[in-house]
Length: 318
Length: 318
Image (cartoon, rainbow over all chains, first blue to last red; front, side, top):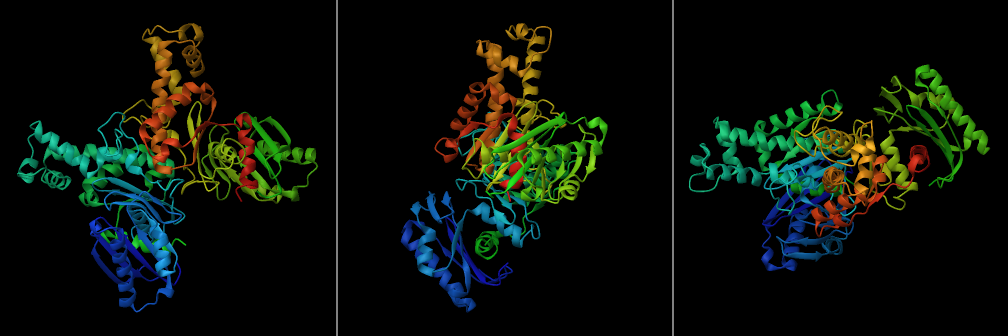
């Protein structure tokens, strides 16, 4: 890692979070503000610029001391130019984000997508410290991924590598948000678990879930709570979902052969309810292969992963 | 590519094939001999050394003019040292192949596995010329793969990346040679097709296959011939198998995002019977994504792919 400083900007649908870090990834200053995308591209850009100026001032560091600014953005992106091709939740289309930041700050700018940056953050500062090839999965409302090879993000030919949520684990399975059927995301994401929970209640499964969800709809978190209380329906549902997650990881290990698998995202907070079946499936499938022993661990950076990963784009990856 | 010369040695269970190429991959001399592994490691090594001496003499080139020698070997391997950990069909265990060649010839030695080298060969000299990220699949008795990123083989942390035949496309599907169930190889390899053909005949499917196979057992080639003659059972069988191949490729495209997919191996000679359903599935699954347009093409190097890929390990990859 360089001894210079870096700034990470995490552009989300609701919030802009920005942090200034040193060469070891220690946060020297941080700030955040609301995105308020409805105000238009220019306003959002000015808010982003403002957060960068703020952390520089707070840390007492000159822009010239920066290795650069890394930006995490919804995509699809063009990581070479830093352009945002299309971000429906921001209402952005073909915004030359990297170029605009370059003009404003005159330092190297790198742009990457959330899951890739989370993988990069975990590799340099989180669960994957010291590892060079890592597969990161975020299991949340959707399932995303980041493939880190030799300490760098594998972005692919069209900047869409690492879409691990869309490997197909069940032919003609449930419809996925992407329009395909039987994607890993349609089998094991928080959304998929909630969908199956709802379907179960609807067909009259007797379950603690009905009580936990109350007047509302059951969530993956409810399913986890019910399973912890020994609810058989919820226990079975999670085991089924995470068996598919495990099978997906078996496929990914066969293809990528990483040193470590790191799982983050809200659903990873189900802890052993998720990790136990996944680890079992992997062990069971790989027998004596070294892939049976690839550590499958929980992400460590929590809510900070976005800004830290973005900062690592300029601090560590170059 | 360097202007130096390189030698590729393809060590197979029955044959050793060796070629000397120039910086553009043109073959200047070639030779081959039987492996006769039953004679023991030392004899096989001497035969391999002999083929190298022979091509050098034939081309009138001094060993000092070599960029190195690349060796394709059955694996698992240790690509860093060039050691062959275990090659049951040769009866080899922990043979320091790279080290022995280094001592004998005093030039850089690289060792790689068949499918990876085939991918590298296709990238530099075959269907993938001019492309830098390529996914190679060989569909034969088994299904193997080679992942080329930035013109180099992605070997992975344990030298087993690219095992695309063992992504799981059907949970609890047919048993695979690897001991797992529902691997791509168990659904779409030549062996899988022959297995399904045999099962069909056994349960009394009326098919041309019975006639084509005669007293023997039906092969994937027979199934292809029968399908070309309009045999409904064979047509359906191939479509079913290659639908799984297509779904597997959809998953691989999502993960790796290559510029091109190249398919080789004996079963790729079924041509449109294989490529049509695969391309259809990919188109259908990716809609407007750039992945819908990733070319999926047939390998070009044929029987030469082993030696040429091995030579490219030292001529192009370094």
